[in-house]
Length: 171
Image (cartoon, rainbow, N blue to C red):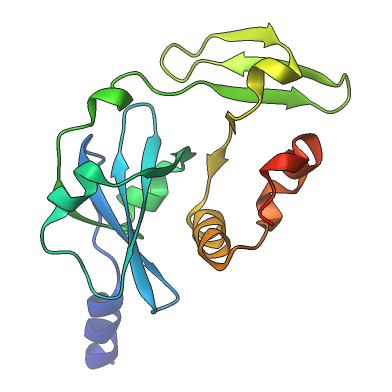
């Protein structure tokens, strides 16, 4: 019984603190790794970079294009589901988090959401075009979205976004 308990502890992710600037390593289906960085306000920037083996020098991410910036549930980090593997300064362009949009399907109205201040202001569909939808994502949904991006297929979790903005659907 004792050996089984010790084995379970070995496989259990270690608890982690949320540290702004930390680099997170995200394994995708045991095939490749992608990387994100913790930003303020429960946001993470996901880099358009994948590697078959874990990165050693995280500075390569400084010049890597941004895939997207999303709100992520705190437990994804604190429970160690994505391992903190390093730390980098936050890019200057991310010192102010990008705006996101909100959409009410019952009133068909759009709002802008300021991730930096929490302010919500009425908006138009045209003004929010190209923005991320304000949401907090779980680890499985983010992994699905990354996998779908690299496979060039629409992500199931973006179905309503694609309905609102069909031009954003991968072809």
